[in-house]
Figure 1 (tube, rainbow, N blue to C red):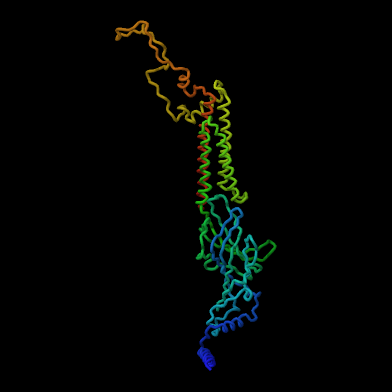
Figure 2: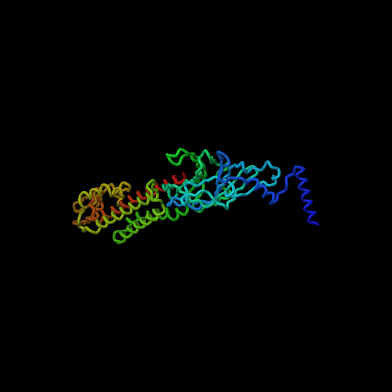
Amino acid sequence: MWEMFTIIAGLVLVTAQVVRGMSPSYSTDLETELRTALFTGYEVLQRPAKQVPVTVSMNLITVNSLDIKAQTLSTSGFFEISWPDDRLVWGSDTNYSNIPFLFSTETYAWTPKVVIENSVNDLEVFSDVNTLIRLNALGTARWTPGGVFETSCEADITYYPLDTQTCSIVLTTWSYTSSEISLSFDDDPFILDNFSENGEWELIETSNTSESAGRSKSESFTYDRLYFTMKLRRRPLYHILNTIFPVILMSCLIVFVFKLPPESGERIGMSLTVLLAYAVYLTLITDNIPQTSLSASVLSTYLTIILMLSTLSVIFTIVVLDIYFNHDDDEAPTDWLQKFTKYFLVKITCWKGGACCRQGKVKPSNVSDSRIALVDLDKVIDDNIDRYSPGRKVALPEDDDDNDEKNKKPEERHYSWKEVALILDRFFMYLFVFLVVTVTVVCLSILAVGGQQ
């Protein structure tokens, strides 16, 4: 009896609402009635209009990785795709005004066929029966297909590892031409509200462009394309500590090879060790960059130059050791080598006061000759001396041949083979200091300036 009373009261209330112009409250039966009314006779393969305007935005969640060698970009996110469908409008019917939204899938409602054109894994149309389509009373459908997108990205390795890369995700229609589906960007093309930073790459800029072009010369139809472009800059700390800094330290070892004395016996071993270390580093860096000839890495160029200098240091070390050990002490160098040493090497290396950058020893002005012979006091008449010893002689020091050779001007000296070898050592050390510092400063400046562009 009580149940019958409840049913009668409910019917009376609904009748009163209808009579007064009020909409029925939401119920599953009411939504089922609305679905039946909307989808009866609905054709899924038929477009809502002759040309359907479709707006797209991308909600980027994170940048997973950017593989420079494989030239692929991995991102996670989802697209928000909206379009009008006049067949799914119920806002004008007051009976269903309490149902603001309906949810459906691509099985029952039409969806635009779009695809990521530069995908590297597969070229499949967005399709997921588990992703719901949100329909509002005005007939606007909103679809959010998502996933992990692997796309191609042409990398520029010029400033590696301080590089900045620009990558795009290209969205286009599949089968539908521009006259059938018009793709455009939403008011906010990139949504970064849920974005998480990547440990290696920093997202510094986003942009978007669109175009309408054909896919082949023989086809007269055009297709809309949307470009979601991201500008990524590599975080440099890891590569500075593990790549650039060790390379600069090793470049200093090339210079100090010539500082070791020839008698140490370790010069060849040290120079070869530095050479092999650079060869290993060049191999490691080559493994991390694409095998392309379109652009060359400044760091690879720097390593190649330093590797060449290291090779030259081995050759010059062998030449210096050959000059130092393979000639007798009493054997004099050839005339051309003597002249080259006197007029060039000695001056440029500041060798023992023989260069223009050092001042020679100043001799007393009242001494005209450093060699003084014996003086006979019997032949000296001095009015101020009353007493002297006849036959007394005073012996003043006379320079030997070694001191005489040292007191000569650099242009008058004759250098031995060992001296020539030591002078060459200093010359090569100064030369390599200049070359290594110049190459390092220039290459690092190019990396620092170019990487910020």
